[in-house]
Each structure stands twice: as structure tokens, then as C-alpha cells.
Length: 271
Image (cartoon, rainbow, N blue to C red; front, top):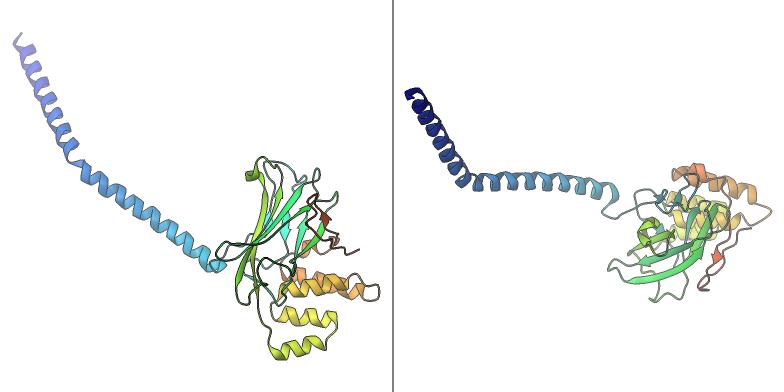
């Protein structure tokens, strides 16, 4: 009986110590947990900031996403990709107030709408239009019109463009999207004089040397319509796409842009 009382006394003592310890721990760790949470938050924030700095350094602070893959809407079969024919990590440069932008449109399971939007740095709408996909894959050109809501593309201003293939009009989160930036510059007088005296292929060479990719592609695309210089233009087109890292698209045909049902578009035919 004494043994049981002694054991019970020991057990009671242990329980009492445990309860006291738990009470102490319950009252003390609030600040400790707060410090741990704060440290974790600061660590995560530092990691995020590192990623942000890497992204900003790589892309100059402006998002460029020139390749769009498959979607949950499955509107592009055979693992096709929507591709913008632009530099990978820099702003696309032009000297034109009505520049052309080129995109590779993959084969689609059916006709889909394509939305093209241009906004300024304040996110104000500059231009938007709708296209329709064709039953075959190819490269299309979208040209900004002269009668924009604003005067024209202002020089040395960055404009944000988006091209979205709408796979499901009720679920726009399923869109396949490419995006980038466009800037118009004033070309140097000496280069301008050279361009005036050059043929289209030489013009494309000059534009390429200046990093003015939109104009270089536009000149060569138009030259491919001619019958007497189509071979040289095609070779230059291949050279330009190789320089952009998109050589696999060099043999894709240039196809016309199809009007949408809203009749907002002009046709751009390269046949």
C-alpha cells in the first residue's frame, strides 16, 4: 500500500511538473514564434526579390513571352505552339508609325478567334482587333493602322502588345497568349539616306544591323510577293529567323489574315 502511495506521489509530481512546463511554454513562445515567422517571411521575401531581380535583369523589366504552348482547351493539336516573331528578351524596335508584327499560327482543331491588343505604359488601350484562324498553319502579319485612337506611336515610348488565341470564349483563362513590347525610334539621318538608296534586301540588312527587327521582317515579307526576287527574299527571311532563334519556322508559309465576323480587319495576303 505504501509502494502504491509512493508511486502515486511520484506520478503526481511528474504530472505537476509537466503541467507547469507546458504553462511556461504556452506563455513564452508567442514572441519566439513571431520572430520565427518574421524570419521565414523575410527569407521568403528575399528569395522572391532575388527572382524578381533576375527577371528584371534578364528582360529589362518588361515581360516578353513569345511562345505559347498547349492549353486546357486543347484547341491546338499535335503539341503546336503560337509564336511571336520577335526578339526573345528585348523590346521590338520599329521606325514605322504603322508597323507590322508577325506571328506563327499553328494548326487548330477548328476556327478560333485571335485577339490582338496594344496598350501604352499607362495601360491605356491604343489598338485592338480580332482575327480568325485558318484551317492551315502559317505566318500572319498584323499591321497597326494609321487611324489609331491616338496620333500615332510616339517615339521612344514602349507599347505593350498581346496576342491571344481564344480557345473558349466562356473561359478566357484557357487562352493561349504571347506578349511583348514595341517601341518606335527615329533612325539616324545617315542610315535613313542609305535606306532610300537601297533595294529591299539591302534595306533588310540595314535594319538588321540596327536591331530593327519588325521593319526587317516587313520588308522581306513584302518582297516575297514578287516573282523576280522571291528566292533572295526567302533566303533573307530564313536568315532573319535564324538570327532570332526561330529558324524552325523559316519554311512555314506566309498566309493571309482572315477577317473576323466583326469586320474590323484588313486582309494581309502574301500569296
